Image 1 (cartoon, each protein chain N blue to C red):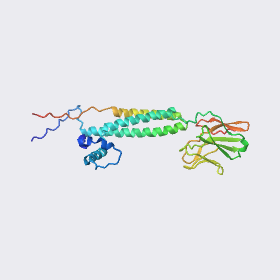
Image 2 (image 1 turned 45 degrees about the vertical axis):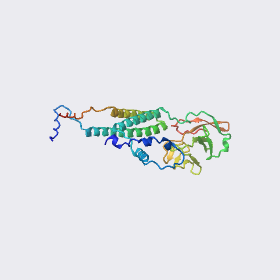
Image 3 (image 1 turned 180 degrees about the vertical axis):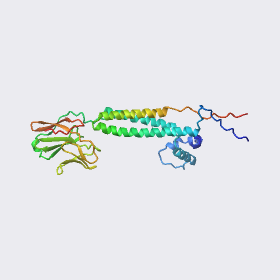
Image 4 (image 1 turned 90 degrees about the vertical axis):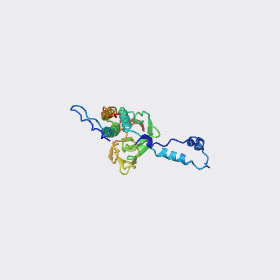
Length: 94
Length: 201
């Protein structure tokens, strides 16, 4: 039984094929970044509540802005889907 | 691992033909069908599969909720209900009946809002809400030490300003605005949160 041919080597300027493991790693990385950002949002919420109750509304608004920017980052992480660059399947010869 | 491999087996016709036995509330007399038991155990122990992208979307929704909550906090959606109090409540009819260093407990603006009137000097009266700004326990007046004290977490407040002096509280007690009408002392509202502790005689 002949061995499967090796994958073609990419030419300069041509993106290399992303393996499934690589795509999975990228997704897990996005999840970790999102969790980190959300922890920051939780911190901001507690500090903003304390600032509001202490009659420091300006500080509370700055923290709200921080939380909105954080949400924008998380939304970008959710919505941006890297282009699928998985290796094309080799056609079986009949 | 495929999805099908972790899903329970399709219920048998026997299992689907026994809805009446499942919903019966009375004591069961017949032994349970082992196949039905196995199906129920499989259904309970099989986790719902959520993909990584699904987790990421959940995180997105969570983040949006936190941002919304933060904006609501800054916009004042969670105002204290006593902050806009304008009711007038007569605390004592005769101010001279309160000794110097003494206290009178009352409620303001509603029956559920405990407060205390303190006579710090001959002509100096102050009043505070006695809901602790830490975790909402009731603050007590300790005449021996001349301080307001929260027994829950050992919080101490200054009677002159309501500011925290020791313990976990970081915010002052809300001060109640007082007016003297004749010999009576009347509560007329609540001072802003950042009050400077000026006592009203």
